[in-house]
Length: 151
Image (tube, rainbow, N blue to C red; front, side, top):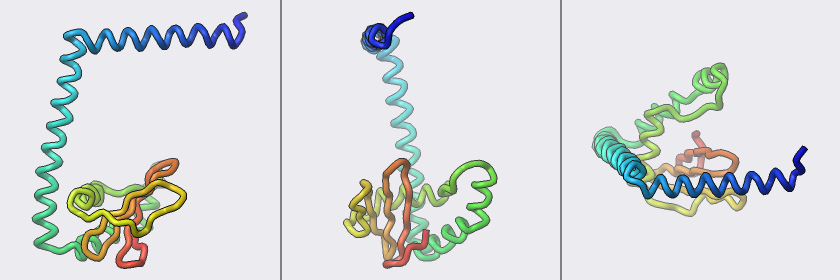
């Protein structure tokens, strides 16, 4: 039977070998092609997101952030939370709210209001709304209208 020290030495050698093999793969033509395919896919997704955000910008300017936020907050009511819990996961933002949050991160102004002293976080302001993203053992969005937490 191997001791923990012997197992540790063996694992470190395997990790080194895996890293060396991976580095060799990245230097190979196949590895370079794989990285280029990944970069192309990432660029395409970014391009699609940019187009979607431009459409959201036009929509927000046309309809107004207040009516959009009222509708989205109403969509995330107790029924939504129960739906999430019954399906075995924590409540999360739906696709529409997620897209609006992406929009706010792109077009909103960075703020230092609602800063946590415990967890790292970021706050954006758009209109009278503060959108706060806090990171801990997960990430949580809080949305404030003026100083009232609405989500």
